[in-house]
Image 1 (cartoon, rainbow, N blue to C red):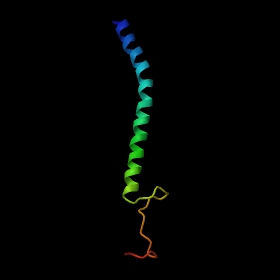
Image 2 (image 1 turned 30 degrees about the vertical axis):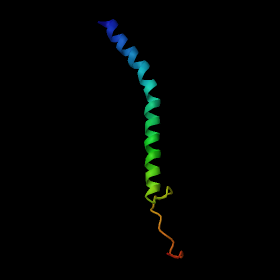
Image 3 (image 1 turned 90 degrees about the vertical axis):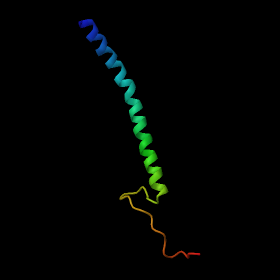
Length: 61
């Protein structure tokens, strides 16, 4: 019984650090995709985040 619990603990200790990088990569990818989609909708990535307004000085056709 004790050997089995030590085996499970050993597997857990080895697997968790291996997966931590994957979670960080997935979170970074999701953030980058969110920023890309926000830029498509006209939002700027400055502080504070605002939506771009068309210049009133430019002529419209």
